[in-house]
Amino acid sequence: MKDVTGLHREFDGERLPPGQRETTAFPVLSKGETPEIDLETWECSVSGAVESPRTFSWGEFRELPHETQRQDFHCVTGWSRFDCEFTGVPFPVLADAVGVREEAVHVLFSAADGYTTDLPLADCMREDVLFAWELDGEPLPDDHGGPLRVVTPHKYAYKGAKWVDGVEFLTEPELGFWERRGYSETANPWREERYS
Image (tube, rainbow, N blue to C red):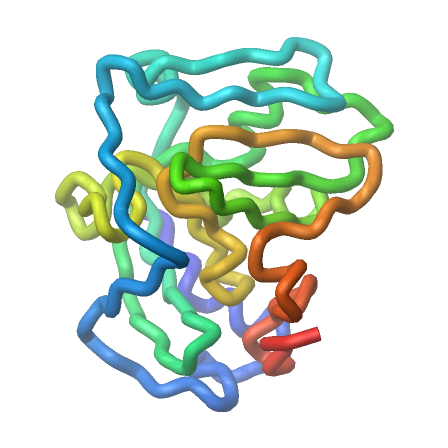
């Protein structure tokens, strides 16, 4: 298992970012109701500035190279959960599978409930940005984004879409759901970048 809980040093911060409190619980926060998803028909489309746009079935996505990582999880509402064990596909693996074009600079994630969130491509091309389907050795619970969510341990968690079903590589930035409503575009927990 890869342990990335020390990444806070990269940002010159303590493991618990400022303004956060540690919890062993895992509160559920979403913009609305939990969507019902059928794995038989689930698809994830990868599109935009890529050489080979693809739509993955659940089986195809699970066949991509994957790993388990120990990560910390920071919610913009002020709590952090340490030592989460997520299993899934590192973002660079997915990027390699479709061939990202040079003009791609940004990524927009979309979800089954209509949620979107965005990040610069450079912030996504990290081994610790995972498309996760397991949490602590169990299938990711529906209310935590199962079957598949993105986790971004170097950002506040709203940058990781639950129920992800689309990844679009963009040639210019496009704001996501919370970013359009005043949340920070950069979302660095160690600088308390909660709101823009």
